Image (tube, rainbow, N blue to C red):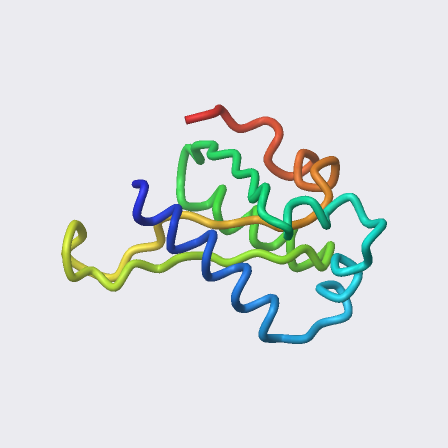
Length: 108
């Protein structure tokens, strides 16, 4: 589980940064509250999804609201016997917006 979360948290940030998207650029403004996260706080909150559909629903909502995210599909070479969706990283983004999507899920 920890490895999957690490994959997701790295993938979302690297993909978002590499995209050069406008949404990424807003976070490099020195007065933006997310700047603390990018400067090394790297706060992560891990919650559990009850089923695969929940991961897909979170992904759809992130797409709709243009929130950085990354859905991890494990290659199936170690713990899983076949490629398997395991987790999704949401953010970095404003915590109040992320909470609207994931706030009802239980902490792990």
